[in-house]
Amino acid sequence: MVHIPGSQIGVVVAQTLILIIGGLITYYSYKAYSRTGSPEHKWLTAGFGIVTLGAVLGGVLDLGIERYTAGDLIYTSVFVSSSLTAIGLGIILYSLYVR
Image (cartoon, rainbow, N blue to C red; front, top):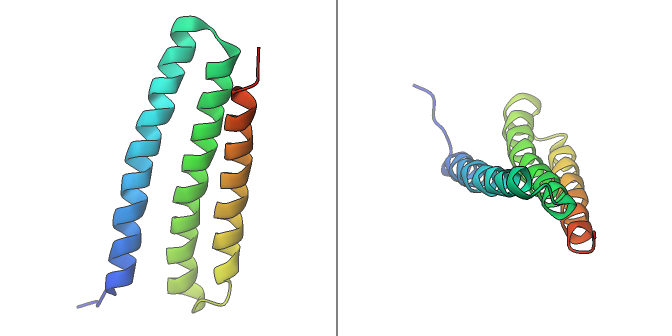
């Protein structure tokens, strides 16, 4: 029987919640864009999609790196997650100024 540390279970639960909530926010902002055709909603959708992708990808990489490389590349997952989150937040900020 394989022992799974509690921290990995916590990461999986948190990443699942991020995927569900971020996915719903992205979906509803896309529906608003489809309904209105507004460029603000288009950029908002892209921003939330990238933030959600970054968080989930960071978690997946973190678990994969920890499991298969003994944590040697742990900063890779942090870099990927942080970079995509920063890009996504920048796009969300841009969506507030688009006219």
